[in-house]
Length: 403
Ligand code: AMP
Ligand code: MG
Image 1 (cartoon, rainbow, N blue to C red):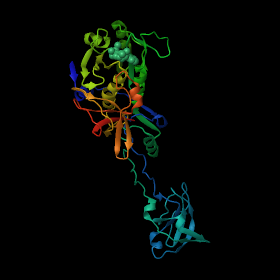
Image 2 (image 1 turned 120 degrees about the vertical axis):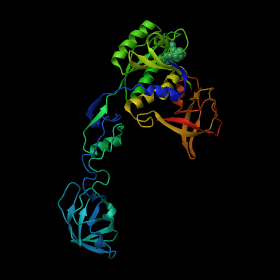
Image 3 (image 1 turned 45 degrees about the horizontal axis):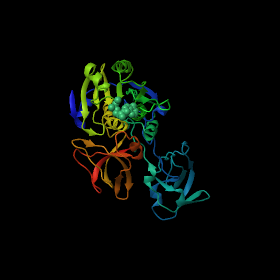
Image 4 (image 1 turned 90 degrees about the vertical axis):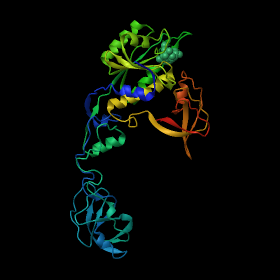
């Protein structure tokens, strides 16, 4: 077991336990937020055929060069979805709508605003442009793998998949993540509460984070600070889940039962990471399943999730941390308030980032204690202050901006 390591080392150790996620075929219409486990190649060219980008007239460019008022004979009209007019000769024009196929022989489009019809003729008063023809395959050629394995299905990616002719996609099965909150002081929100108790919140927030990262959370019933109770829940979670996440009980105290049980019966890979808040996280294996022990303080558990559990998802999907799904992005911000760093640890102060006229700027609004989950709502980002470094007003620093 390694103790008190830096974030990069922790991430390297996490990346060494690879999970082989299974795949499933799902309807394209159900795929938003899913990750392709098999690349998608186009079944067609895009555009499928040369077509007009404008409503107007299909013409021969050479016919329209001579003077400003060219008279062309109308041979008919063609709209998107039809193929009535198949060829055009010199001196002729064919009315055309956006998306309609270009008749053979036509090589340019005149927009409708630059024309006037007179009986059987059209008088062209503006330019005939070749660029108003969308050429077959100029966006994608048949066989192009425009959505490779690892692609995150956004609204645009879903449209692209349909454009390419797919109505089903192969995606990673959502990893099943067991979430176990520990602590004698915890009671469920809206239940009867004594003076010495608090409402349990972490399992709710962590479940939401798991969903954002594409996992399927299972929230287990509260576990009291009893090793026997915890063992029972861990054992059943290990059977049902791909990853276990506990909250609370990883510090040095006598009642820190997650650390205790992992020391005695589990397999700890590392404990304590040089970050603040969130110092005492634990990572290892329980019954051969990866397990993160997150600290109980609500801000700490959220930030350890961001710093260590999000990368676990990225490694599992085989994508970069900067690719979706993620919780946001690394940015540079100008501090409009002072923030204190931490000795020997990366310091994650909550900040509110706004896009100002000279770039991103950040301010501080609430008490920064690791027990104050309101600080994660009142702010939309965190500092990434290197160890032993504070920031003064006006300093430009690394930060993470939540999306
Ligand atoms: P622990 O990590 O168990 O020492 O807990 C640290 C702090 O976080 C204590 O003040 C706990 O009461 C609080 N805490 C622990 N678990 C939770 C939870 N699931 N929801 C809200 N607060 C918690
Ligand atoms: Mg506790």
